[in-house]
Length: 185
Image (cartoon, rainbow, N blue to C red; front, side, top):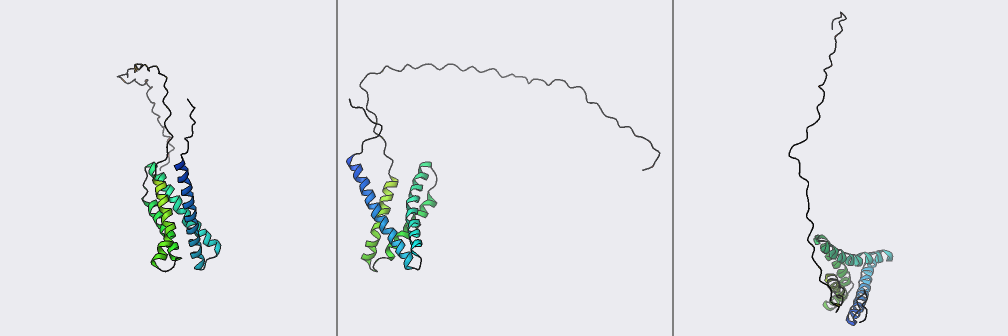
C-alpha cells in the first residue's frame, strides 16, 4: 500500500481554478489600477498620487474582504467593515465608469473588470477552506480499548467550627498626668 503524504494532491480542477483566479485578478486589478490612476491624474494630481490612490482603493477592497472573513471566523460583527468594502468597491467602479465612453455600453464594458473581480473575491472569500482528505483506514484489526473506571476523588472534610484566635492580653490604658504650673490658659 503506498504511503500517504501530509499534503493533499492538487487535482487538475484546483490548479485550473487558481490559474483562472490569478488571470482574472491580475487583469481586473490592472484595469482598475489604471482607471483610478488616470482619473486622478486627469483631475490635476501628479502621477505618483494617481498610483497611490489606485493602490489605496484597490488593495483596501482586498484587505477588507479578508478582514470580513477573519471577523466571521472569530464571531465578530462585520457590518462596519462591509460598509467600508462597499464604499471602496464603488470608488473603483466609479473610476472605471468615469473613464469610459459616455454611453450605456461604454459604462457596462468599463464596469466588467471591477464587477468580475468583486464577484470572484466574494466567491473566494466566502468559500470554506479546503481540508485534507481523511487518512486511509488500516485493514489491520486493532485491539479494543478497555475502559478504565475513574479513581474515586476523596475530599477532606471541612471543619464545622472556626478555630478560635489566641487570647490577647488586655490593652493598657495610658494615663497622662497633668502638670500644674500655676499658669492659667
